[in-house]
Image (cartoon, rainbow, N blue to C red; front, side):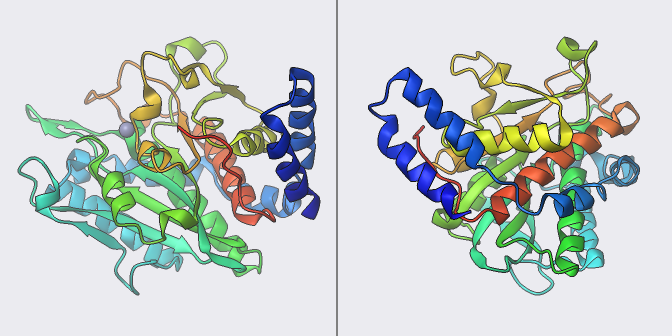
Length: 347
Ligand SMILES: [Zn+2]
């Protein structure tokens, strides 16, 4: 594993001046230097992320009981309580205080009439480098009730929420068997995304782990559906941002996919000139703007996007499972590799 850091350092020294050919060689060396940490165990714990459990969680989380989870409403407070109780029942700790999983955001922080809201945080403490943290995030809020109709937000972002719950459980099982991550993993459920990424902005302005110790952010926003482009070949996920700040993170992500999940990684929306500007439109951007490497996992838009018809019966649970397993594998590697993921670019 030592070889990895030497290879990367020498690559940095050369990248500025090297020719295309040398650049290609260096990339090949970088790719070869990525050694998957405990790949057998990784594969075993990834298998505990199941379509069945994701479905059970999502039918609850995107049910009428949570009233569309609009920031600051009764439905949203029920949702955060549900997430908190899940972590307590799984024995997964809070990084804030013993039984307080909430990071309160005061009413004064919001531009409209919201009386206050909260992010929900849980974590697994790293065995060797507990101060360094890999952040896995998804937003917990949605659109609420409009004209008497509940906006269930099963894909947006119930899918990301339940994916984190399953990923956290897999890491917890590993930890109980002595295979806990070397670095800490923060499971960050942010509020007020639909109001303009406000919960994640609040977290990055008031981080529980200092931003300079934040290794990367894997952000999940809509991973349970298929968009029009992929109706014929649905074994895919859009990745956005993976190469923007860290060449190494990009190739780790690719290697995790080719080794475990083997989906088509679609980079269409990662193009610098993409007119949808998705890179700036979900919670990862609040990390990326501080030069923290990110990957945004996304299935693209569909006819039920921001409609009351975004319901849990329309979710592709096998695909949701596979996508969550890829994110788990990438987080596992980021948390367990010898040297911290290197940042070699700026926004
Ligand atoms: Zn969303």
